[in-house]
Amino acid sequence: MKRESNWEYPEPREGIAGQWDKFIGPGATAGEQLIALIPASLAALAIVVYAFVKDFNWTIFQYSIAFLLTFDMIGGVLTNATSAAKRWYHREGETRAKHLGFIAIHIFQIVLVSWLFRDFDLQYIIGVFLYLMLSAAIVTQVPLRIQRSAALLLVCGSIVLSLYIYSPTSGFEWFIPVLFIKLLVSHLTIEEPYV
Image 1 (cartoon, rainbow, N blue to C red):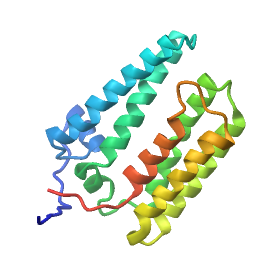
Image 2: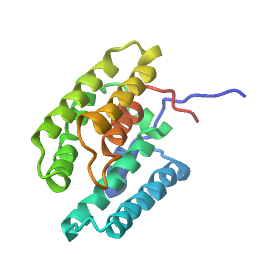
Image 3: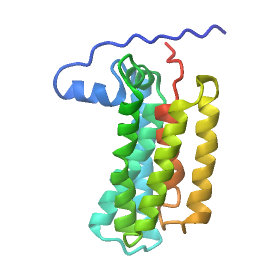
């Protein structure tokens, strides 16, 4: 089976549709959009139901943030791995600094989890963020032929961090590994976008 890659992307549309294009990648197919939106929606609903059944005694604000974080995390893993996103986020002019900046803004999500679900554990924020940034720097520097392997190795390290360095966060036991999969494997790795 011949695989044909294509790095060409259409210009983002105008208005709100253009903002969506810049988020998911211009020219994303219906399938690429559905593979991101449906599982993300189901996962976001699942965390709310799970927290309710487990009686975590969350506030409405915590339920809302849990819903939004889960939607973003699962949607981000799947969206960033699409061909449309690979074309867009690895287009000419996207620099290492831009990629590291994109990774760095995710400190906001780490802070939210720590603040709302870990009694504002500062060591957790610092440790997870430093490991994330170090990992991202490594992934952007290694040779392309081992980039995915390096990213996956660092994700394995995030699992150790999540389970053995920090106590798991009730309802968010999955957060650290999924964050690293989203950012290191789905976003940072340069892979051929297929037609």
